[in-house]
Image (cartoon, rainbow, N blue to C red; front, side, top):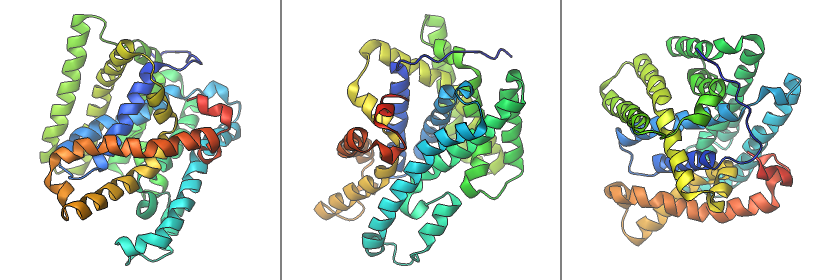
Amino acid sequence: MCIMNYALKKERLPWLDYVRFFSIFLVILFHTPPQTPIMDGKIIINLRIPLFFCISGFLFNIGKYSTFWQFFKHRGKQILVPYVTFFVIFYALWLLFGKSLGDADVMWWQPLLDFVKGEPHTVLGTFWYLSCLIVMQILYYFMQRWLPSQWLFPASILLSVAAINCPLENYWHVWNAMVYMPFYAFGNSFKNYIAKVEFSTPRRTAILIALGIISLVIMAFSIYIEEKNSMNAIKIACGVMVIPTYIALAKWLAGRYGRNRVIQLVVMNGTVYLAFQNHTIGFIKVMLERAFYTGVMDDHIWIKFISPFIVMAIIYPFAWFIHHYAPWMLGKKKEETLEY
């Protein structure tokens, strides 16, 4: 196995913006009704989760941190600060309006308990990703300190297999962090490969497209697999398989269309989209049902593909405002909002 020592450049890489933008779009698409087992439960999951963690691993540079506490201070600030900030905002809104909108049976203290456990699903269900990411980064930090570089990816696979076969209490999504660790390790261990993979020749293009299609087909047919451990193993294998195709496609788009300021702002404020998306989807659903009838979104699959664009447009002004005037909500200083 060849472990690369890719030195990440300081300037923004346009293809990274495209990868992260479409990952955010797919997250919104996943949460938009109607829910379909094959498309949402298999295909979209196969596209969104692997890339989120892979790119986080790609951007991780342990050389920036001389001690664990320096690392934790930096990463904890950019993950835990928005985790706390947005929870406080949306918990207050939930107390004011949430119970009257369908959560009457949830006790007022339950979201606080879920918040402490790292899974505020009643108030901010999508923030499971932040909980999982901070645990994953802590685990990987020590793996990288203690293991030779050539063992990082194999060790992450062994850790994932162990987690799949030995379910743990999933507080702060420790179990998910262990299961999805191969995506993070792949992005970090193979930086040079990821930086170079692209549709450079007809043969390579055909191979990459074939890998992506095979991955999606396997995931689509995995709906018939009932054994959970086998399903998790397939999910990891297919996720790693689809990553190169996804990245090559993003590089092709970046080469064709170049930098885009709107896409750039969206990805730099992805946490804002993560926080607002479900509430915005709910708002659109309420408006459509008032205008037409209850369940209108569930009855029309085409609405599912239009709604994410509307959701992203509605959230954009909030992202713009926070980016320019309240970057502290994301655990950043103003000058840091220009970085990944």
